[in-house]
Image (cartoon, rainbow, N blue to C red):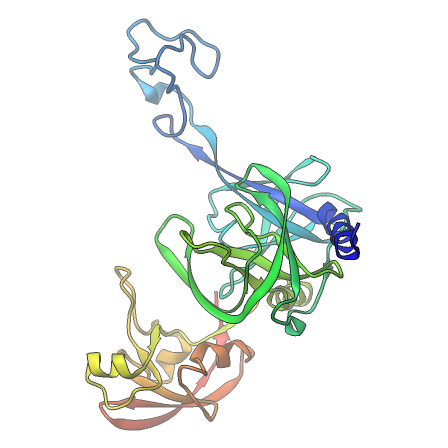
Length: 357
């Protein structure tokens, strides 16, 4: 057996016990979900005979039946503390009305409770009531290099737990837009890791590891229709979240309170602007959205829709230096200067960062 194969096998043996499957379920009304669809089934799901006047095995009055819990999805996660603290993707545990069942590698089931969801990044932390659990070793995503070997472990398609796939790091610092749940919301993810490791639905939230058995990323997204293009969040994002949980009991992130698009030459021509760089404050397509959130730090600093933020904290805003990058590296309570254009006039202001709820 080749040394690289031995190393791969040892890595999987080291990490797999800490990987969990997450089953997502919802309470559905009796007229929804996979209830009584077989056409000639003479009994309902409770083992009771159907009324003679029922059609295609469906009782005529569905409101007489109780609501039922239905599996609506699945994801993955990995244990980071022996008392049951689990890291996963926020989009896996995004909906508060859902219930989450965690299945460990020894096939034991636990009720999962969402401890905190990162308000900016696609990271969340779950907790189960257990002790002496195997844990994953957290690595350093800042040391990742193009071409290095990476291994993904997760609950592929929500059906095949502890599925292992292997590949390389294909790209760094990518920017993607990913869907959040079923309500049409999307999230812009920056600085993510691109990999050719086979990642399927259900792998979300599982670990991406190096050959030292260290978690370097959280598998989070694929591009439908493409081959061998997957994305993972840098594990250092989760390390920051875990530090916040330990220190404050919740994940803390500063925010500005604006929606914006980064300008380029095409957008300059489209909107007939005087500049081709900066952050144009503008609302998105979602009904009811606002360009500037009332009472937010941006609002208090005087920013309004159609303003163009050109610098923040003495740093120029352009396509290589996004506004969100500067905010992410700041702390709640920091007071920072900014400059913005309004109808061609340069305005200088200060804002105090507040906690994003």
